[in-house]
Image 1 (tube, rainbow, N blue to C red):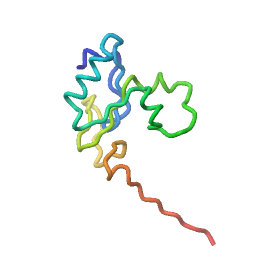
Image 2: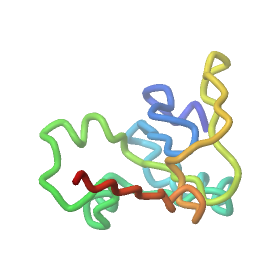
Image 3: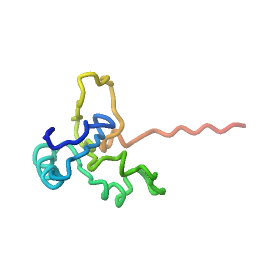
Image 4: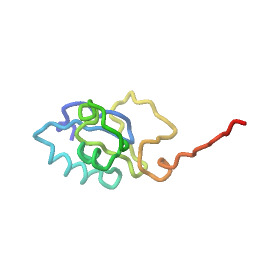
Length: 111
């Protein structure tokens, strides 16, 4: 699948942006889902906006340039190691597992 990409995979291991060559846009989605569909949800740039993946505000003017053609978001314990130099973390927070999406909120009131 790497031959289908026009740029390296970016963002992070649990939410990875894919910049796909135009001639492979439809084939990429099909092949990605066949190979990784049980571990990742794949969103096109349009779906990211429609589903408000990054919130309901006005998208930045460079959103399309920076978001990639597709965003793969982890739903299992897998991630993309797109470089041998990636730092290894003990935990991740960019996926869509329940554990990653549950962020504790601590509120302290000042007297």
